Amino acid sequence: MIQGISHLTFIVKDLQKMTNFLKYIFDAEEVYSSEEKTFSISREKFFVINGLWVAIMEGEPLTERTYNHIAFKINEEDFEMYEKRIKNLGVDVNVGRSRVEGEGNSLYFYDYDNHLFELHTGTLKQRLQKYCL
Image 1 (cartoon, rainbow, N blue to C red):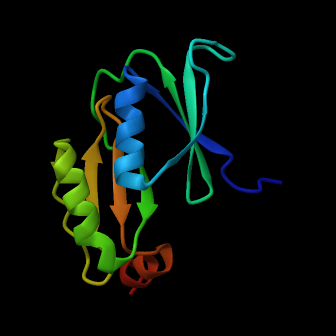
Image 2 (cartoon, helix red, strand yellow; image 1 turned 90 degrees about the vertical axis):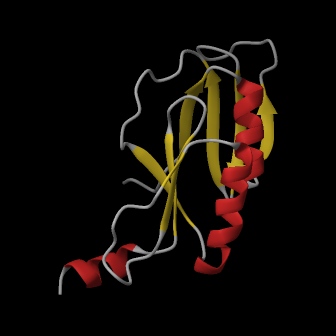
């Protein structure tokens, strides 16, 4: 039986740059760094973001941007704070797509390796209520 998500792994060109990104935007706690050792396929670091294990591994970044993404839930009242954090890093921010009123707001932004992240204020229940009227 599936119990939930174990972890997310992102391949990144610069471990330190992504470390700063994760800590600054997501308040990620760094819990492990392989330093110069390689236990898996490359040097790596592990973080915890509100109980979620996120791994980054050194490697070649994605060559293209897509809409494949990971979305993190945030409170509506924190939306502007996160928007400022993201813009302060100078990463590419996309305007949230057109929304059905009441399904929440989103910030979409790319990291330095073409991974798309979303910060979303809504829930699945809210979205289904709006889509299934």
